[in-house]
Length: 112
Image (cartoon, rainbow, N blue to C red; front, side, top):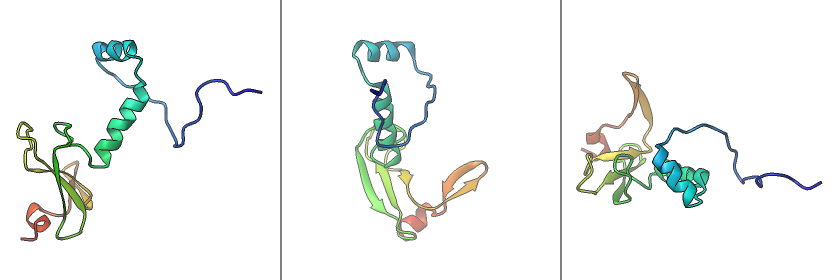
């Protein structure tokens, strides 16, 4: 018997609902865009530290932490609200007043 529906993907997936602006949805439908692929590509880039989580550009400087060796990115887009700040890192995280923050302070990160 022949399989019906989409072919299986090479990774585990979960079906979720996403709220998006109507105009974005209509534009992607008219362009015949694979919305799941687009969202997964964006999330891959975000979590693999390939884009700035604030302005979403790839104008980044990469460096490693002097304390733990974790990788970090600094945004180099002058129009970004966090221009030249550490916007993503792989340093160990701790809970601080309900939010996750890196264990390494900016001074420890730069080896000061």
